[in-house]
Length: 80
Image (cartoon, rainbow, N blue to C red; front, side, top):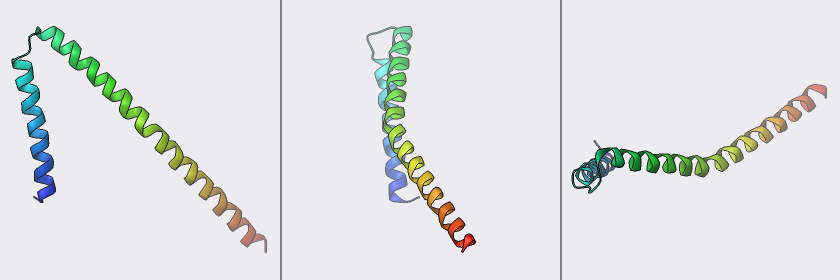
């Protein structure tokens, strides 16, 4: 494995260990912890969706524009 792979694996393992310890030492009951985790997960999902929606839309618009330009170019070359 490369160093970057090891770093990523270490970060993931550290996050998992931190989450497990946080659950063990939490002052809340299990049902409250699950509710908190679910809500945070939903918030993260919304944030990620909002963050990637605009770049994806811009990419799709750019691709559509390029395709239209290529169509016009091909039609112009065929008709000449």
